[in-house]
Image (cartoon, rainbow, N blue to C red):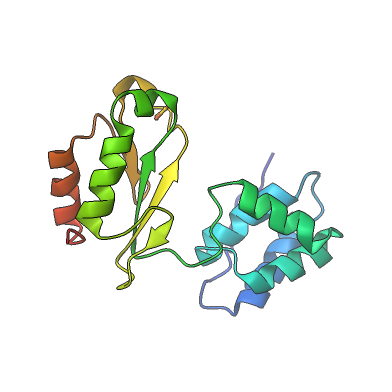
Length: 166
Ligand code: FES
């Protein structure tokens, strides 16, 4: 059972300090790499390049192994995200119900290519692969909040509320 996290590392701490604290917390558990990477991204918003070496050393892995896991999972970011994060599902059920058109609309409406962050830092647009809302596809997450059966008009309304529509 996981112990409650009473003292989450603060993003105001230098990256290395945060990463070392998280290695100390998670490093001893079996299969520590994935939980540690999640914890680092939760704390810092991304997994900075300098964290890879610390994590590799802390878990007695090679940098290539750590880097391989980070790049394998779409969830992990090597760069900081924008102030808002829009994640459009590109998995099968959503693809069958218009996800491709929705993603194209999102790119145009936000002025931002998928996998990218707009130059002003306002928004990051990412594909994700199944949000568990397949019966209500196409689906997306906006700052962690799920939205189902998303139409272009609904997308624009949400983007307008966030002040990220171009
Ligand atoms: S395929 Fe998109 S929510 Fe499952």
